[in-house]
Length: 442
Image 1 (cartoon, rainbow, N blue to C red):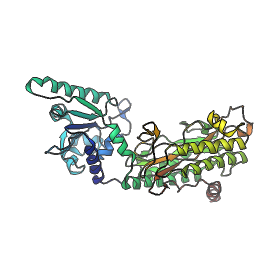
Image 2 (image 1 turned 30 degrees about the vertical axis):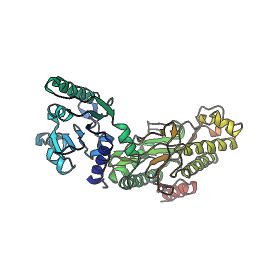
Image 3 (image 1 turned 180 degrees about the vertical axis):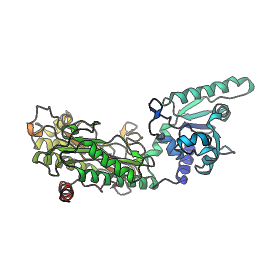
Image 4 (image 1 turned 90 degrees about the vertical axis):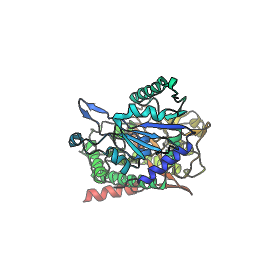
C-alpha cells in the first residue's frame, strides 16, 4: 500500500513554521472519536490538517510546533501504550513510537497535557490554532491561557494574539507535491477499476446496492480503508437527485445509472462520476444528453492549465450546455441572454468542479482579492458538468424526463497543461457500450 514518507511530513512542518511570526506556538488537536450509537464508534478518520502535518492516525493526540525551540520544535502529545486496552482496540504508537515512527522531537502523554501545555505557551506572544471546530479543545485552550494569567504576578506572560492556522495550512494543502500526486493517481486508478467492475456487473433485476457492493469490494481489495465519501448509485430518476443516498432502488431495463464514487488512500481522495445504461445500450434521448455533458466535460478540461483562472472551466460548461439545450429544444431564446438569466440552472444547477485532495471537497480559497484564483502546477480539481431533467418537469417533452447524467474526472495542473487522473474508466459512449457488451457476452 502506498503511503507518504515521514520526510514529506517533516518538510510540511518546516514550511509551516517558516511562515509563523517570531515567538509563536502552533497547536492542533487530532479528530475526536465519533460515536455511532451507544458504545459503538464510527470508523476513525483523522482530521485532515492534523494528518497533513503528522501522518499520525490515532485519536486523543495534539500537535505542538515551537519554531526555534532548542529542545525540539515538533512535539506530539498522544496516548501511552496500554497492553490491557490494546487487546480490545489494537496497538498504539505510544510515546516512544511517536518519536521513533512519526518524527516527533519530543513526545508526552496526552494525560499530562493540562500540566505541560501552559508552560509551553508561557512567554509566546501568539498562538496559531483552529478555534471553533472542536468545543472541547477550545475550552482547554482557554483554560490553559487562564492558568498562565493566574501566574502573571510571578512574571508569567500569556499569549496576546490568536491567529487562525487554516489560511497558512490550507494554502499549503492546495498545492500538491509530487509525492501527493503519486498517491492521488493511485487512488484514482483504484477507483477507476471499481467503476469498471460496477459497469460490468450492471443488469436489469439487480438493485443499486449490488453495484455499491462491487465498488466497496474493489476499494477494499485495492487497499483502501474506506470510500472518500458516501457512494452515490442512482438509477433512473434517482440520478436527478444530486446527493442521492438511498442506493436501494431496482435497476430497470432502459434506464441509466449514475455512479459518483471514489476511494481514499492514506487520506487522499478520488472522486469519479460515470453514467451508463443499465442494459449497456443508450437510447436516442439518453445519448443526446450524454454527448452534450461529455462535450462540456472535455471542453472544460481543455481550460485547465497554469495561468488560467479557476472559474473558466465552469463558464465553459455553462456555454456548452446552454447551447446544446437550445439545439435539443429544451431551452428557447438567445444564448447570451439565457446564460445571463441563468436559465440553464433548471437543468444544470451546480458548479463544474471543486478542489480535490485530502478532503473530497478540499480546502483552499477559490478567489483571492476578489478575483478567481489563477491555476498553478500541483493544484488538483474535479471537472463534473451534468444535466438533470426532473421526472416531474412538465416544461419538457415526456421522453426527456427522468434523465440524469454527470461525468466527473480528477485533474492535476501540470507545468504545461493538465493530467487527467481518471482515464482508466471509459466515458466515450462507444467504449462504455463495448465494455458492457463484452461482459454480458461472457
